[in-house]
Length: 267
Image (cartoon, rainbow, N blue to C red; front, side):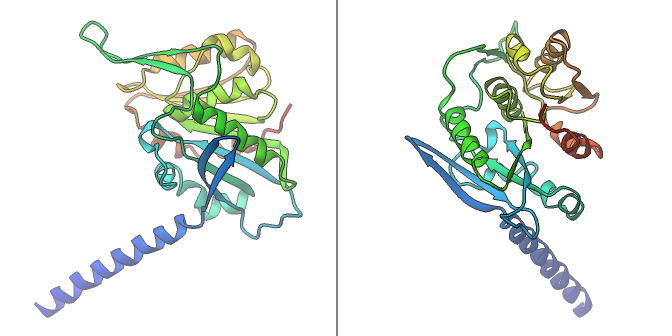
């Protein structure tokens, strides 16, 4: 009985140590807040190991989904935060990784979402092809501009990617800032197909979606992929036959994702 008790205590202790280690590791993302001209945007930033401000580094901007909106400056690391902490990633790619957090009352992209109905079982996303950016997108563009003014950013190696609402934000940021990015990925997102001409030939894009997605219809990604092709681009497109909305789990497990992404430089 004493051995069993000791074993239980040991397991609980090790579990606690493991959780503490993860918490301390995620804390390597520094907490920052962007303030300028009425804009406020919390964000977390992970610097490369042995960061040297005299050197140049690539910039990776990661946009979270709607479920991680808020102002705690923590929730945005839920999906993908640990990925960039992987030792192999950090040794291979010397990148500055930034996770901004969209406020609860805003959205990365300019889209009107119609709820599902009896006749329309899936939600409908109506993406605007123009107009002013949302409050979150306006602040995001300001943050991006601020980051690009830092001397240690390699402006030929700036990347953006996102999931769900963040995938939509990725497409919108590409059309608003087509000359900034070297490559991008969009997971279970979507956008206005009428705007892809602004970036289709300039920015390589890898699009992911789950075939069984019942939150964001796969048609959103299919429309964007076809539009990019029609505009002269050559997008990569991966569909996961058995994945629902959380196709980011599959996408982030793709062994070639970051090798492909960081192999590109701005055209």
